[in-house]
Amino acid sequence: MAMPLEKAEGVSSSPPKQENYESRDFTELYDEYFDRVNRYLRCRVCNPWDADDLTTTVFLKALEKFDQYSRTSPFASWIFRIAHNTFVDYLRNNRETPVDDSQLLSGEADDTWQPERQALTNEEIQLLKERLEMLTPDQRDVLTLRYFADLKISQVAEVLGKTESSVKMISHRGLQQLQRLYEEGDRREKR
Amino acid sequence: MKRDERHTPPQTEDATISLLLAHLQELREAVPVNYKLKEELKQKLKERIAQMEQSQRGTEVVLQKRRRRHWAWMAGILLAALVGFVLWPQDELRIGRPQTLEIPRQSVPERVALAPYDEHVAYLAEDNNLYTYSFADEHEQLFRLPATDGNYKFLSWANHSPRIAVTEADGERSRLWIVSMDTNGTQANSQLIWEEETGTLGSLAWSPDDRQIAFTIIRGGEQPEIWITDLVTLQTKKWTDGEDPAFSPAGNLLAYVKNGAVWVMNLADGPAFQIGAGAHPSWAADYRLTFTTGDGLLTAVDLSEYPHTSDFIPLAAVPAGELIQASWSRDGKHVLLAVKTEKGMLFSIAERD
Image (cartoon, rainbow over all chains, first blue to last red; front, side, top):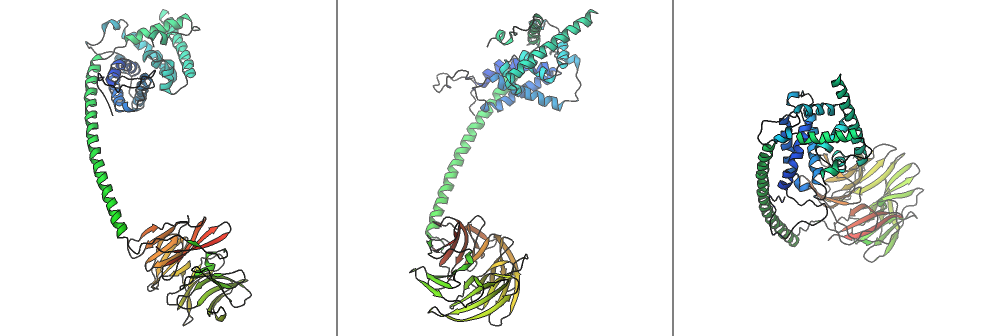
């Protein structure tokens, strides 16, 4: 398996110049997609350590299977299919694990974290997480992939094996339901 | 694609949904990313990539070595094949191009038999007579069989004399006759060997010394039985269950078919052993048995080795149809092939290469 770490300069055997052809090597793709995968898993998993372990697993799996990636389809669909399947496997193996709310979506006291993005409190993120848990599994999958993994509708459809129209419908209903949950929450707080 | 394009809400969505989307985007960006892990994992992945590249190079070296070894083996096998071709064992069964016989087509293969001498076959005709046909000069000769009310069914030619054993079906009765022929085509005499009141007599075979005849008795719905009659003492007794008997050239073994499989029995002490699925066994030589399989292939088994070795005998230019039977002449130089076609059984003769 050819696995160039860096792009070789002056090499004539460059990949074919097709539209949508993904020519970047693995480390370049890793640099771009790590944040999205890590965020997606931190949104879905109970504690950040598990999310980080899963992120590590996702990229190790991706490296082992990188020669199977066709390069003509978006890398985002491919890596998030691995991420989503890894998450589903994790859920199957951890059905009895109780949710530790105090740890939910919290970050480690780590210098690499970006303090400017911590304006919203963990409490707000926790609230969103709880409301997401009140949606159907399909709605949860679609909304997290769409709005936290930052995927396009077509890519979400590919990851979940659904049609685009089905994903649009699920997304629309999920947003409406989430909106209602927020409104109900607001009304309760006012009382 | 820009993020704005991805998250632009449909126009039908109301303002509150737009606010929700904006809120979700804010939350997404607020979810912390473990950048420390990002750096550590990147190092780990780079190390893994280096290992994989090294392993790939190693694999290529191993593959090159394997390819060299493979070619060395191929060269060795080729050399062995050449040596084998030059020193081809003479007992290897190979059959030459068959010659179709100009004789009437038959319903069953047992109505045609190889004469053990002078390159002749004998066949039973519709007129209840026996004809011999020389495949050397294509000359045909009539031999009159004893007049009978029944029909002659199966025949077998003796090994050392102009005698044939022939079965006759007469209503529910069946009879086994031995007919001695003279060379001018007239009947000399006939001898009744066995009469079956309500059964059918089937395929039959002479022992190599012409002293015994093995034949098949089929009694309605029962397992066929092989009986052997001694032509000197005229004692006849059941030998085993089965059909299609064939004495080996040395006379010590009897091949037969039972329940769709070919068996071989030692006539001296009785034990029988199964050779394989098939029918119509015939001896090409001592300890060299052939039989046909259900898919029309000819299989040869070497009984001098244990475990027995078997292989398929390639047949060139056999008439289109299913090979039913291959019967070897007593000297093993010719084989009579019976091929089932839509218009009946077609016969051809081939020499052993």
